[in-house]
View (cartoon, rainbow, N blue to C red):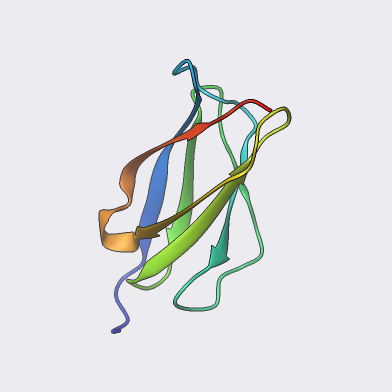
Length: 89
């Protein structure tokens, strides 16, 4: 795996009806390089973005009050425009 210019993992978190989930926490649980221990909070439109310092596979976890946590793995070079759906508990 080679180092690359920093990228962005960005997307939208929605509920099962397709409505954006505001205030969801999105953070890395696994990455190909050390990452800061920070979380992105989704905006009113459900959008988020996290810096990906190198190319590779990143595992994201997303959780919000009233929803089951969701985990997914994405390749940093294909992770712009991600859409994740959270299921209500």
